[in-house]
Length: 248
Image (cartoon, rainbow, N blue to C red; front, side, top):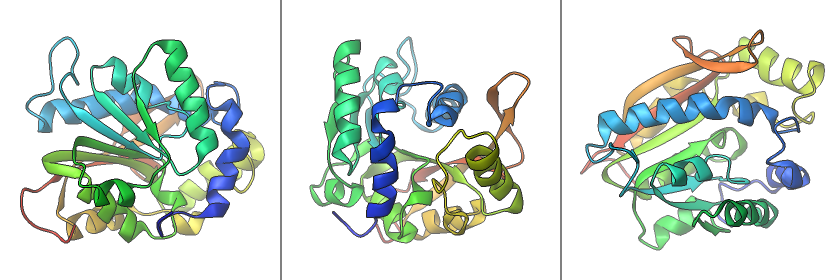
């Protein structure tokens, strides 16, 4: 696998692979985030991808879901009409994803691959997503470059991650891993978190023009995430691939 893959990080998710679709299991935060992430992603598609809309708002669009895991994002995108390819370097995740998609009657292409490998094949997509992935790769510059390279000119890239702030350390590590036990201890490394300005700079360097940013806030009284103005903990960034430019 290419240099943006960290075997130790993959091992963490391999250990949780069988419980990807358990809403009360170790991946509970992703289940709670999914509704608001998808709503915001759709808003960005409607705004920046002119062909997105109608009863199936992603109908006719090709999507690459990078670091797809067990398919928590890929399946909703397919139901919204997209032709989805999900890639992940961990085969155990893909086995779970493929089996769940078959049971749901969804045609999703799942592959053991990295974004660099897909880019090398010359494949380009209308929408590229990488949600809660960049904080787990050892080379974020190379990773964002690969995302840009798999995006067609005028296409959209959407990422979500954690900001490198004290608030994120408390929420994502102290609370989620140690106090609440939502995630296994050691799931995150605070030093790999990127502030929005740092992620946006990496995007611009490879020809991706940031067009949207939102924070995600957890509301414990309702056990849900909502969008917010403050990206100090979780946030999402959308960027358009310029027709010409960058180093992708």
